[in-house]
Image 1 (cartoon, rainbow, N blue to C red):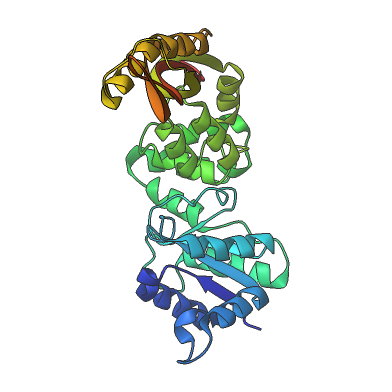
Image 2: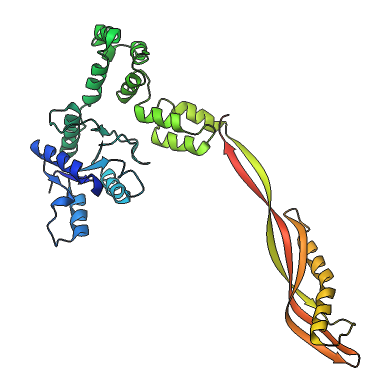
Amino acid sequence: MTDLFVSYKSEDADRVFRLAEALERCGLSVWWDRRLANGENWNSQIQMALESSKCVVVVWTRGSVGPAGDFVRDEARAGKRREVLVPVKLDKVDPPPGFGEIQVVDLTSWKGGVSDPFFQDLVEAIRAKIEGRPAAKPKGPLLRLRRRLTVGTLAGAVLSLGGAFASDTFRMQDRVCGLPALQPHVSDVCGALGLGSRPGKRERIAWERHTPGNCADLRVFIERFPRGAFVQEAQSLLVAKRVIQTETWSVTERRLRMYEPAGESTAADQNAAHAAAIANARLHAEQLCKGFAATASFRYKSAMPDAQTWYCVAGEKGLTCGFEGEAVCTLEEKSTQEKETCGN
């Protein structure tokens, strides 16, 4: 049994190779499909490794979160179902829907070194899954925050706060996280660390990108960030939902069975007799169609008889014809479209 299974998009193989190599240098046993021997049954080998690994590392990139990354998401779901999933991202992307609640290790700036604090966060998360214990608090985001706060007077202010920032009341944390310099980066990191009631970067971007008034966007946002900084506002907007109904009319056709008996007028030949029967049937077809449209759902436009089975009778004065067929009704049909709106 290997320590971990790596799920990735094939176009990211070069970057994943570097990641797998670094993990092995840390003493972890890594399985990924580029090491399958020729002739092996790929599907069965991959499925066996996925189900038996102690940890599943999914690599989120532009390719794996896109339309062509279905199989990566399937493997990630298998790891999530077993509660052994550790997500890592190599590109600045958001995880696909259904994975937003799992903390992602950010390796978008990783240069390949095993001493990188974000890479060490990944190693710790993997080992925690293997050993069946909670992972230690990530160190990378806090170190990044400290680096960013070492600029000008902002650095002096934060350093003077020292350890009080992490242990003090909500008011001090919110004051530091809300300092105007280097925003929104400081606020994003505070959100990732759960400080100062700030949204993390993914939540902030998702909130900025949601379409105002769009209820579906709000539902997706709440599903992705059920404990987020903006969730209360999103829920309030949903509660205030309004439904607007719009009435539209569209042209449609209906066919009604009809019978037209042979009339009293005669004709010299069959063509003329048919034409006379059609002319006589127009009023009958119009009556049928208007009767059908006599509801709130339809409006009458026109009617035309369509003869399908003819019968004719020859008499002393000429030929008379009738038919069985359909009245072809051209109508306008009403439909009501509902649009929900949440907020202004």
